[in-house]
Length: 187
Image (cartoon, rainbow, N blue to C red):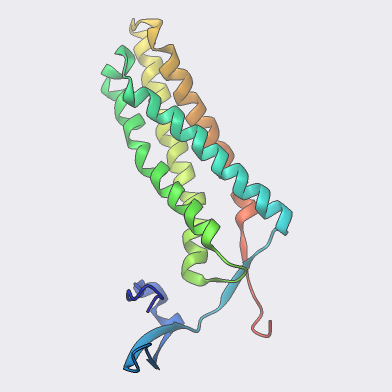
């Protein structure tokens, strides 16, 4: 049980890493709670590299989020084409999931349990590439709209979409700074 009093939610994949133990709560009642007993992981990168990777990812996601929301809040004619607008709107999900990865990254301690390790690594590796693909698809749709005679007034939207793509590529490339390794059992 978490300190907040909520039960821990454990994925079926990681259930073997937890053991049920009986403990006394603050009111003196006996409760059965899951306690993590699986392998622990730590970041491979040094403290300075990890700190710069955290800052870099926050800045890249902030710029990417702003560049993504501006065209969606102030749509132009270029986004009237479904092939340009739909992939751009779908970029919201990977962006939110990457922000959740940022939260996991900043709340990770020196040693990280396996489930949190997978959430950090998989979110940055997987969702950043999904964001690259979706924003690139939107760029292709916008390019097709320009070739079809769309007004060049939509150029700021295209530039914002290009910024989202570049930021997503940089987040994907920087995932190596967030790799984790298993801590030997003696440490």
